Each structure stands twice: as structure tokens, then as C-alpha cells.
Length: 321
Image (tube, rainbow, N blue to C red; front, top):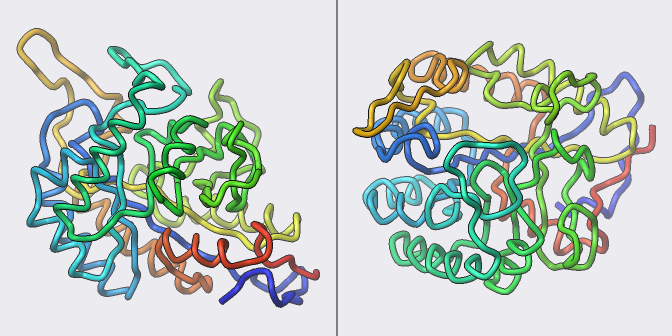
């Protein structure tokens, strides 16, 4: 399906056709806060069952370290028909930090290419497939990262945090000089959707974001943000893409409270680990059902990017309302 070829005629009362990309960041438990892989090993299998139940393809973004330490799970995900993507070498800051985190030192620009080259090779060697889709840890991308991805042959990136930059709100080819703006790169940037209709009360606009409402609240609450985003995009005559970012550790019960590591204790905020496990699995199941009922077309990041690359422009079908 080429998104720029045929105009769609819909009335303001009709439901807008839209696409969904589920991206799972395969990393250490609770992001950078632990060195463990309980989520990858025990949260991924029930997640795969839900995806199979709903016949939903997804993209799994593996850090090189996660892939190297979980080769059986990498192959299990691949053999289930899902895309194997890359999430960097470790769960580390590759791009431009958006908000402060303790003990967080970004990778130097001069280090980015080497680390991404190594990560790509590890994921390829473990999975037997060349990764062509990427996502930066924490959605902290940069112009340097995008240029390196282009050089390494990636065709899609899903690092763009729409809640912070606000636009572009549909997939686009970024500029080689500023990744947050449309340009002429072959790489396709897929924004992670948020609610652009609400007034933010957060200095970084994180209250607009999608994550992790499906488990801290419910799939129905998250669908309110989905509907607001779909309406916003419809008003701008574009075809919406709902790109989700999720993690396997959300689907396995995580420790609550402080985590002790010899010289220190780390205590994630309660919402970070709230309802991980059975509640998250139930609500993700519900989310798949609600999106399917709403008319979603599910596809991988690679497949979506290929449609944009083969189109004459980077914009999806415009809607005649």
C-alpha cells in the first residue's frame, strides 16, 4: 500500500484509517536502573502469546548487550515473525538528553559511530538478520545518531519524542543538519505519538506522552490519548501513525521500592514500576483489541518505512474531509 497515491475521502464523522507500530525496547530491567534481564526472559514469552493471538507484527529493538546475553530469546522473537531491530550497545544516552538523570553521561559524538557499529554487528550475528530499524534509549536521539544510522544502512528510526518536540507528527525523512526537521535523508523517522491537544503542566511536556498509561491506568484511558491524536492529525489532513514504545520488563513483576547495589540504593518513582506483570499483560491485550476494533493496520517499523521510501514524498495520504 503506497500512502501517497490515492486520496481518501472521509467525512468528519467517519473514522480515520491509521497505522500502528508496536516497538519493544529489549533492555535491562527498569531501563538503566538494574543490570538484570528478568523482563526479557520472563516477560517476553507471554507478550509473544498476546501478539500471536491478535495477529500483530511488532519490532523488537535489542541492545547489543541484551542480544548477546539472551540469544535464545532473540531467535524466539525472530521465529515468531517479528522484526529484529537495534537499541544501541547498552541502555545508554546516545543523543541529546531531554531531562536530567543522575549518573547519566551522554556518549561523546565521536563515540557514536563505533558503538552503533558494534551493536549492529552483535544483533546481526545473534539474530542472523541485518537490523534496519533503530530506536535510541529513552527516545534521546540526535542529528549525529541519525547520520550514523544512515551510513550504516538503517531505513527507519523510532526515537523521536513527539511530546517534547511537538512536530513533525507524522513519519518524515529528517534533515542531515537537524534531525527534528524534515530533509532529504533516506532514513525514515517515526515519531512516538502523544496527545498534542492537551495543555501540558510539565516542563518537559511528559504529561502529553503515551507511556506508561496502559498499565498505570488502563488501555481505555490510553485510548483517550489515541483518539485525541487521531483527531489532531485528521484536522491536519494527514494519515496518522501510532508508534508505541514498550518494554519486556513491564510484562513481568518488577521490584517495588529501593534497589540495593552495594554502595548505593536506587529508588525509581512509583509509576515506573506500577502494575508491571499481570496487569500490564491484561491491559496490553485490551489495547490490541481496542485498536483492532478502531480499524488499526498493524505493521513493523521496517514495513512502514519501506512504504514511505517508495512513495514520491515523505508525507502519507492527505485526507479530503
